[in-house]
Length: 132
Image (tube, rainbow, N blue to C red; front, side, top):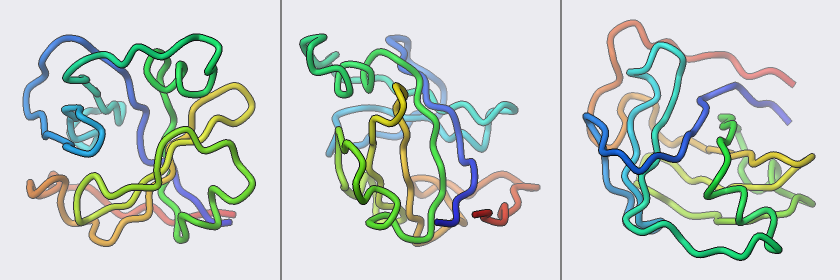
């Protein structure tokens, strides 16, 4: 499977500049391409009350995640413990979150890399080649 690093996602309770609303998951997100370390801030409308026994889902809402761009989302998540998705947070991307080796991974299959929730990606953003 080919993949490329996309971003690190961090849950926050504080509003962030430039947030975009994701109705399906009831969160605001920032564009990680605007952050020098490729950080995406995720702010839930209401923090989900997930029992700690549901470890993967609990970690999704309490720990950072690592996101990878993939060519085929279904292939990327095959055989994995999927904790959320697949779903389209916006028409330009389909995502799914998995729990692998104790961490949360987001796989993203982009349909359009020119923007993030309707806002153009910053100048200098370059497409990163995917590696096996």
